[in-house]
Length: 633
Image 1 (tube, rainbow, N blue to C red):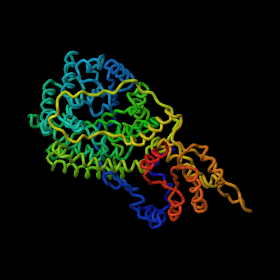
Image 2 (image 1 turned 90 degrees about the vertical axis):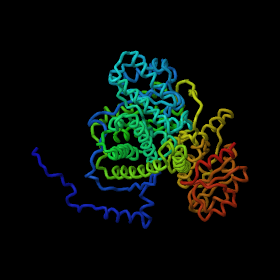
Image 3 (image 1 turned 120 degrees about the horizontal axis):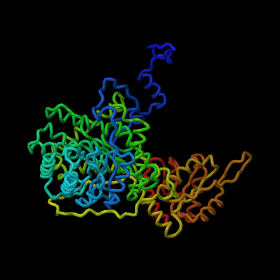
């Protein structure tokens, strides 16, 4: 076949489409509704996400990993028993892991487990590990960061390994430890200098570092926004950079002793943009210091706050999106929380799934082969730049307050994060931000999954605090809905039955089907079993019109042993029959009558007839279900 340089012109007979053409078509569909309200989304930082972007052809790739190099597949070493932790770590390394995250009890990423920071525990957990084999160890440490680094140094010395031959990211972050715990053994303005002294000592021993970590997971776990996470990470890194320079380390060398750690969640585009934005922001800092930017080391961990206890299998999908996003966003190392992490200490199967999530994306999908694949994408480039601007403004606010330590003491950072967290929780409660398997599409009969029978670890406090601040406590977005499901499970275990709601389906299936499905999903996300049926109607008149058989409806309600009732039907049927059905349910002993849909002009009549609450898309699902639990038992 002859080669040709001419492109295939399948659409050559059509005029080129323009944005104006598209907008005219959109306007016809919206029928006068505001474009911004209908098609422009907004992040929790208030950033506009447009539905359509032109290609940003001139945008250069963001410098990150070595071109074509895979990110490191990091596995958590968090079993409190050092021998068990060692067995899992070696198994992971034999089966594809290329890095280990050594998680210590009481650290930000311990999630109620983790190793003791002692010499003996760390030595046993890393027994058989070859420090000079090119496998990276990254420490996730808490208040005992000095003890952990000392133990690791002692272990390297005992093994007779040259410090320069190791690949250890020490993960020292005393500011982060104070922010999480809400207390510090030293004044916050003394933490960075103390870290700098430790880092200087490690460097003098011959370790390459990096030694200090700026950990944005603190803000993410507490419910903060992407710009807030970036601003916090930038502020902490600046504090450590200044302290390192003050020890006499040239700033060009000091910057290489710091690395970053961010959370990666299931919002694909925001996660990609966030990781890209961090590199751009730090390059701006380097420029301000008179330095030519060099790629920074960025670790990623899949987000704790997105994990759910209910339908935990969905966590695998969330993790896959998070890994995809972090990897394409330029992360150097990714650690995946196993899908059962919210339920307890994961077993080997869950750890395998966490590991293989990354290996499949790397080895089968070849995601690491392209440098910054988002480069030139109009939407991602726009979001990256907006995040940079928002994060830089938030960073300047922290700096104006005297730096990150002063801002934490004043509660400035905590207050801003709390505002965002409240907004998230409102969106979750109204299902604006749905959680599959938890706030949407529940399965009351889901089979339990297995976790290890290991008790959570309570990290000991070794020194009394010199300073107390408002703690940046972690959350999971699903917790409030899970509490309702847990209450339902306890009731079933005690009495043999869950709280129930009877669906009073009026008319034919075509009349009530859609709203009955909505109501079933609505109540069962709170663990309230929906007792449904095929409707209650008789055919009347020459055309066979359906009319509700109220006697049959009441009999079915009483037989269900439910204490709540919910009317489900079409708008047309509601006009004709809802009021009578509500009266019948109330008279039959229903403690509370719900109405599926917006009542419109019928509301006064329905309320006088016995309807207590209206449920519809956008209502406060969580508050409604919390009240329903009180009524149903």
